[in-house]
Amino acid sequence: MLVEERTYTTHPGKYREYLALYEAEGLEIQRRILGRMAGYYYTDIGELNQIVHLWAYESLDERAERRERLLADPGFKAYVARMLPLLQAQSSRILRPAPFFQPQWMAP
Image (cartoon, rainbow, N blue to C red; front, side, top):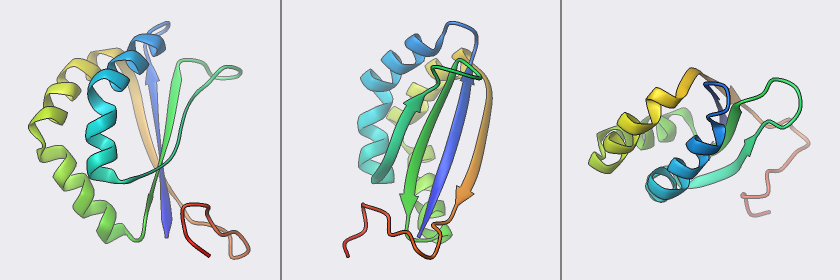
């Protein structure tokens, strides 16, 4: 099991516009294709104008297969064309749970 942490930094003051666009056009597509949304946040203190989303996968292979389907989806392509001008930077990290932690999306 792993979690991908994706951080998008918007141009100053554009995070609200990003969130509205995502809710209207990107959210349903990502939920349908990526599956397990483990979290979706924006920064309020510290480095501002950042959106952090977390997606859980069983493996890197599952992540690769789901991301490939996402990037091929016509609706997602249209969303990305409108979303990218709002961004300054993007980063992605893969997180693995500590041995003593059982993620909530996994049944005991």
